[in-house]
Image (cartoon, rainbow, N blue to C red; front, side, top):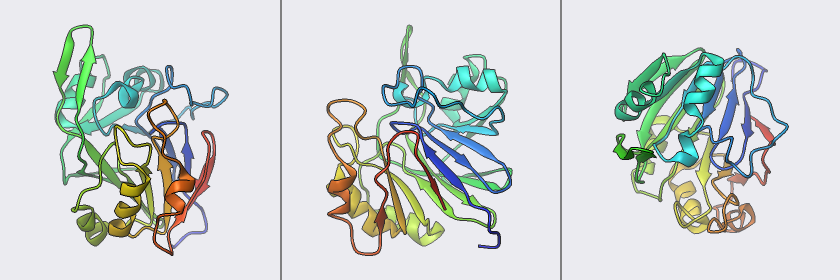
Length: 236
């Protein structure tokens, strides 16, 4: 790294993560706040949010995207069809990108990468096609390379994510049922080869039974599993 300042990653329950870079860029991933039973109720988002990143269209990942974007005047970054859906909810600035694309936000280069999951958005008018699920690789200028896998099972092309981007910190779902469980996440770690694993998408609802302790017992030596709770932060 070329700076002593750190990038702070705060887990806000489920898959919601706030990333704050050394130069003050604030990125919020998959805002699930109002109906998230694990959201730390005393936590206040920064007044300045540079972008909201959405991995897919399920309500437990994007239900608060439009309200937060409109309150903070924040752009929403998502796959093209989901960005269009969010724009239809009154969000003034959206960035509709696609797999393999990169957008620069402050001192962060945000690349959309593959994920394996469904991605329909549901509202009072029914279920809508909003593109496919994705993950993000976030390369911080003078700092770490982060990977938020979104909702996914393990897939072999995680090897390509390692080869292309070499993320040092991986945010991986471990709850099971809807996503990877600890066994699959441990295998994913072997493909991605991060230094640190931040477990997400666990403990929110009864079916999500995977735990950081289970993951830590399965990962290869050299990968640190952080056992955190909602509201905790990690500096990289």
